[in-house]
Amino acid sequence: MRPVVVAALGFAPPGGAEVLDVMRRDDSTGRAARVLVWSLAQKEQRVGGERFYREMCRSYLRKVAVGLSDYATRRAWAAVGSILGWTEVDWRGAKSAGAKLRQIAFKTARWGKHLLLPEAALQGVRWALAHADVEGLLAGLFKKPTDAGDWKKVNGKTPRAPSPASGTRGKTTAVICPFHDDRHPSLILFANYGGESGGGWCAACGVRVAARFAGGIEVRATTPSGFRLHRDPRPVQPQYRTRRAGQIEPGRREAVTGGVLGDGLQGSRLRGTLYEVLRRAERRADWPSEQRKAWAASAYVALGRATDRQALPDRLYAVSDMVACAWSPLPNGGQRPTSWKAVAQRRIVFDFDDFDDIQGDYAEAMMRVLRRDPWLAGPAAVVQTSWEGIQVVADLADPEGDPEAFFADEEVIGWYQSLAQRLMRAAHRSGCKGGKVDLSAAAAGRWARRPGWRMKDGIPVRARLVAISSSEKSSRVQEKTGSE
Image 1: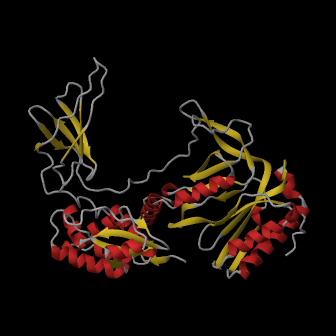
Image 2: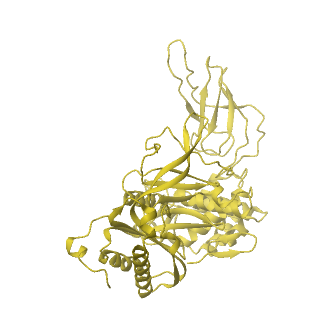
Image 3: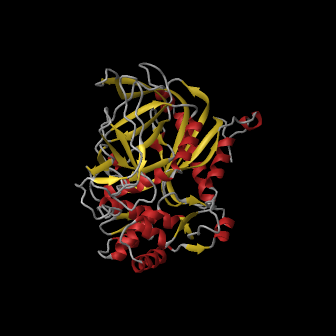
């Protein structure tokens, strides 16, 4: 599905801009909406299909933020709920939907409301939260109206100070944080040598404190509290880490993964086979933390605070086996590669762009075409790079030692074009519309996309692994002519 473009905001998933408008309101309803949206984005749980489960209620919002009235939370609940289109069910309905419920004592505790959100609604929540965070709407949201410069006395156990004489390490302790409406100890304190002073930080509201322990525990805030989801991205210079396992040695032939960060490419050896790397990348892309990073990156790009690659790097892998042929020194005494050369060709990639619509079981249809071709060994994968792009990678039956000469052969280029057209026809028969073959992929030293999130013109786009086969073809299939 193509994204929605909102004036002055760039990309916005369905409902994202409307939720952000409610959060921007300069009244109690807007403040309650910020707390509600922040709470919805915490620890969401996928339940079957494309739905997510979250236990939430208005009384919970009044507990986590000070000063919210029942009227404000009721108005915010109705406004945000009507936009997102969530479904409220009881605990039986949530359990039947596949949700894992928390364990409570039925006579001493109460359930909250059980919400089922469509995946599109959750994407709108994450987008709105990322923009609200960048615009400073969450600053001080969970902060008590107190003077941060005063020393405040708190109750609790004094942390143990480290002892250089005996070699024992110090031990932290947790106390109730006085800088927000804390219900469980979340202010972590430590003691300096001597045990008279120390410091700490709150795991909930983020405040950092100075502490003194003469006659009890007293703390004073050194930084303001208030939640901050992400730091501003800094322009990052590409740097190759030479001290880690899997480093690229000068002159060594390797299958390489890489990422475009800033204006340069950093790379490392494949850990495992290419198809194991693709599976790991797909699992990682499903993590909620990865999705939140993508939405935060889109907010920074939309506001002009970072470029696409500064906010979120492209994740790639080399189709050819590569060798680093030029190096530059690093401050730690190591080196990083600055130029690459293809030295072997074990696989080939097909790049299809500009689809008007991608639908149907196109991936399996393409895999069937690959299995019939005698030039290919069997292992292959199909990655949908965006709403308009597909990449197909497959192992060659006979690996080549000279990629430049391999792609200069007219017979190879003729086979490549023929197979690319057969793959395109298979996609069209499955329901895809439009599209074209990018023949520039038929060259040595090309890079292809791994599954994961990236930025495309300020829009967060996820590349998905839609089909994969790491097994060799049988001898019967190897003997096929490759014709459909």
